[in-house]
Image 1: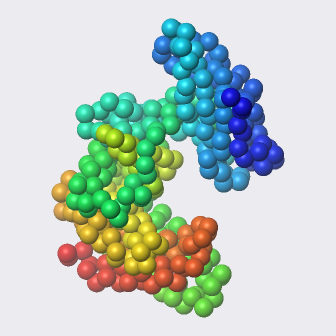
Image 2: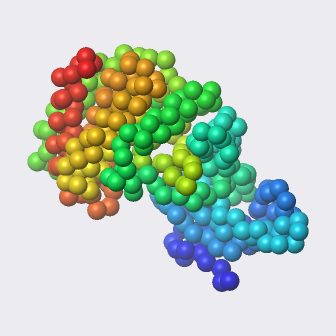
Image 3: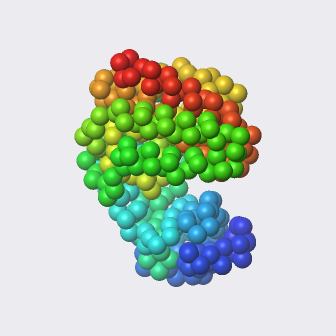
Length: 347
């Protein structure tokens, strides 16, 4: 079987901010680095790397790498593993691994009765400043949003989020409403710079978002994913697997479902030309989560959904093939923020 390194190593070896990225794509280096770190029950002997693929890469910031690894089982047969390696600038992998391990041990393992899991943490690789988790084979939930019955899916999502919020794992960071608004303050003006014809509308939207966020009372925070949306949920035959906890933090209990709903609205606009096309799913998500977390979560969920949609105005200018949607997303965000503000928390 020929070794696959894709894309070619030369595309990554010059990233000074990630000095171990080049070595992490060299099979012989990876094999040596894994020799005393990779311990899988029922196997022995040195690992062999059969393939390396760069899955996601942001120059100077982070990289996600897939490794096809072969091990020798104790009975002499071959064992194949698909592992994902995570590398981030100025990180050694310990905190990400430790966080995922804590979630795994707090009831998110692969055999939980409720069918809600996280990927299995495997090991850290200090020599390469990355850590490894087992790859989960499944479909991202975003692929099925338009064709799945809203209520059952929403109930599963709400249970998963509530489980995360109450699992007791202590995050290392905090995300407040001020932080949420600060992100908008730092990004939306970039859209105005690129699109002067939208500058006045962007300014008004920023002001409206600030006023809206100020209406949310401070509540007891909980462990929150913070970047929770349908692409962060993998569906297998019998499991719902939550992935990518890089932004895990203490946050308002309404943050995650609000973020999810805001992404649903953007996906509705992008795929169906109408931000309300998946409105039944949005409503089902809100109702299912409120049933789990309590009525006092409804208003924060709506506010965070509106602020998330506003953030997508900026994201539309930075994500490939979405630039044509900027004004449409802006219009949808203006309407969502205005409707939410008019509601005033008295739904």
